[in-house]
Amino acid sequence: MSTLSEVVSRPDVFDVVIVGGGPSGSACAYWLAQAGWSVCLIEKKEFPREKTCGDGLTPRSVHQIIQMGLEPVVAANAHRYNGLRSFGFGASLEMKWPDHPVFPNYGYTITRFNLDGLVAQHAQSHGATLLNGVEAVSLLEASESTSAQLRGAAGVVVKEKSSGVVAEIRGRYLVVGDGQNSRLGRELGTARNRSWPMGMALRGYYTSDRHDEAWIDSHLDIRDPHGAVVPGYGWIFPLGDGRVNVGVGLLSTGGAWKGVNTTKLQEYFVAQTADAWGLNDSTSCGPPTGGRLPMGLAIGPRVGTNTMTIGDAAGTVNPFNGEGIAYGYETGRLAAGVLSEALLANDQRALVMYDELLEQAYGDYFQVARAFVRIISEPKILTACVSVGMRVEPLMKELLKIMANLMSNDHQGPAELGYRALTRLADVIPERAYDLLLGQSTGDD
Ligand SMILES: Cc1cc2nc3c(=O)[nH]c(=O)nc-3n(C[C@H](O)[C@H](O)[C@H](O)COP(=O)(O)OP(=O)(O)OC[C@H]3O[C@@H](n4cnc5c(N)ncnc54)[C@H](O)[C@@H]3O)c2cc1C
Image (cartoon, rainbow, N blue to C red; front, side):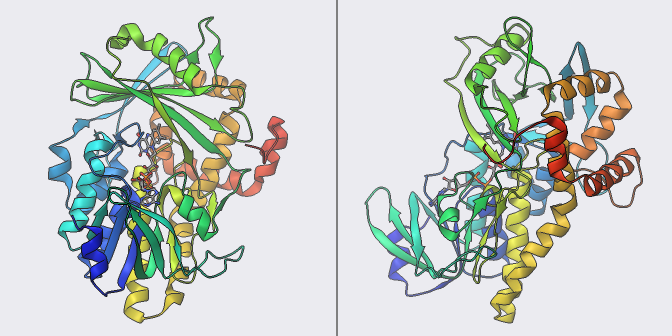
């Protein structure tokens, strides 16, 4: 780990300065550093640090972990699982992760406390300068933004938390991966499209005898004490370390969660699953914590003359399943590839490729996902779909492939065909039509 005084004593301008040592920032730093570029990765907390999360890595995340050469060290700190067990409306289904030409057929659970420092230190061991306990407090010499472009910047002004020392860190390029609140992203000029869906989730840890089960559970009907279904879903992810991660999530497509309190939702969910998992005050490891899930590329712009946003700061959570770690790793890697091109060609204009690559990778998929969550966030429609779907196992297995973005390009199975049908649906039905169809207002969440 470098100290701030060591770093500022060097006269260098880094090739790339990255703000945020979560999945997106650390992956970006790793890919740039292993390509030989000089990188400074700035994280305001000291690793290991808590980050509110379900702690679930799907095969898509595991693939990125493997690609970074990190699987052995992650596996040594993680719990391997086989797939998803879904519960709803009196039925349950056990669905293995599918076999896929690229992605593995297993996932891991690992606390972010343990995971995130491993990736940041991996970037460091490949040559990145890692600053811990140092917060980027403002942009350095920022230019004006436009509605289509982020502001440019010469780097960031930082503050070391322990000493209060303030300094400037300069870079030819600046990447911001500062997470869901993204204060620095907003200073760059980002804004969220407020008419698109947004997720909100809460999680707590419990000790449980069932901590090492080989499945992660998702519950599609949460009930209040009177047995009425309330909007939202719940999960229980065994961590293999004596604990389970228990959480709830809500989707909003325009103020829909306003009447719903996630703390209450978590209480209902814990009560519903308490007997089966041994959840009670004495097994609780502390009060739950929550956060927002900016999804479907709802945050933009994402590129400026020499600046970019990645991960949650760019709204890259998958609206289908609330997964954001894989998309943090992937967008960090995509950004690193584009930055390498720009640095090699000594041409900032290469950065526009980032938006094009995001569009190619996620454009259609996220459009379908946004349309899908608009429909299912209507409780009556959700109830009807889930209670039928849970009784048709092949349908749910195909849906799992779509929702976890594990379809394959060279295979025309029902998931791929179904997804193409959904894509066509999303093309012909404008999103506004869903709002009208469901009688929902937009723009005020
Ligand atoms: C309750 C909940 C459950 C979830 N469950 C899952 C799950 O099971 N699986 C999954 O894939 N996704 C899950 N997600 C989503 C996932 O946590 C995020 O999508 C993911 O962490 C995004 O990574 P990131 O690198 O963009 O941001 P983050 O992980 O938020 O990292 C941002 C980093 O930037 C640092 N930072 C912020 N500001 C500054 C600053 N000014 N200077 C320096 N450092 C700064 C922060 O300390 C942080 O370390 C969940 C989210 C929530 C809220």
